[in-house]
Image (cartoon, rainbow, N blue to C red):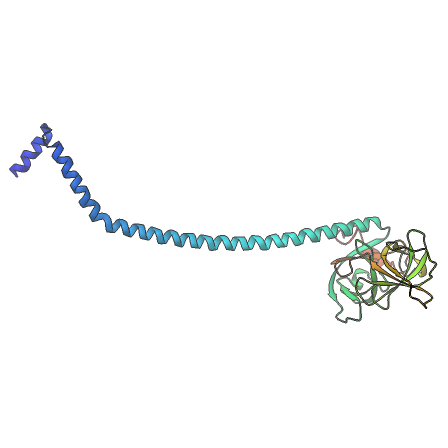
Length: 276
């Protein structure tokens, strides 16, 4: 106790023990560091594994978010394309002098020999048989069957489809028949001296009141002369996207006897979603 009291007095009033204190503190630091080494190592290992787990969880979370964003981006791309197609349809409707009703394709005829589709508009919407159907590019076909909520459309490529057409360049009148093959049409009874060329645009002539006049139908794709035949073999490609269009326009011609009050009420300006 006396020694301790003496050291305290020397530390308070003298500098004789400053250097011994420094050496002693250095020695004690090593002891303290060694004593704390297991705890430091444990903290470092725990931090390493916790950081690794955090990063792993973070990566999984970011990958999930990226997947959701990619899905949303794909949906957005689909909506952009659909909006583009609808704008093209509206542009086509604006060019037409007839009233139109927008419909959506809901089914395809599974019969490979037939070229028919189903749309989501029917008798309750004023749709009627032999009604003309178009898309943003041209003539698609004609309504052949109507129920209350949906309608069947025979495409112009169906074997039973016949469209009176005219060559836009010179108004040469011809008859166009479906081949039963998508993207292929056949011109009937074309005289070898007929003034037609590859690339000529064919439009509906309006003859027979089967289709309204002036709608693009197809472009001449090939002209072949087969020896021994009286007529040329002329094929054309449809202008409309028969196997691509998701939305179609049902045409209501004002001079049609079937343009009834029911149809007109279905096309009132208040129904902005269905009117051009």
